[in-house]
Image (cartoon, rainbow, N blue to C red; front, side):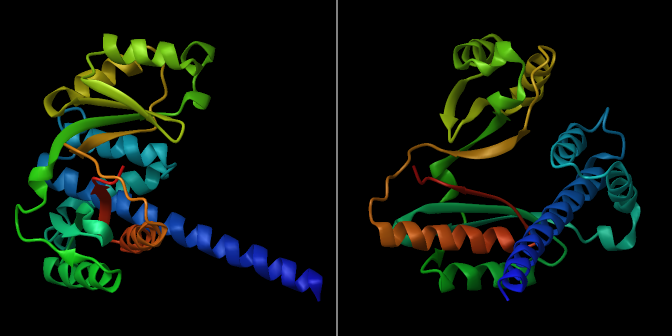
Length: 243
């Protein structure tokens, strides 16, 4: 009986992992298709597509999937794909921006509205929250994936400065480099030329000021909200001013 129970638990965890992987792959392929639709299918002349491909590879999306996603840009069902940005307040008046890709804005808006309201948040009107953020380039580096030189925090910080970064910070063991939006690709290439492995890079919304939530109940409600939003297939990125 215990053996059966143990297997059931392992299987349950594996199913969760597989489902999450499928969701991530679906989001990545949509991002590639939209980038190719908007700027052409050649990553050498389409920076947005190049970024989408690099991000997909960092998540081990197979090359065949990437190729099919690019080719799909000319398909009829890809023509409906478009970006969206939804503004909202979460529990504790935390400001939230939800970015993604959809083939049906009305459906996506309704789904996200339901998730937010179910998790003690409320929708924001156009521009009511976006002004609290600035769009910047964001490059993430995992020190443990680097050679010995760039495992050291001081060397990563010097690298960021020399590569043209505007700022940098550490969060949960990840080294984050901030750039001006227009400088993202240049700084990315400068870092890459040093042999540093980049975990992710993209344009992101960075809060001008952060707020701290001490209440444990509100923290848990925010956690549930972010997890529920992330499970939505259309959502690509979630930004907040939570410290």
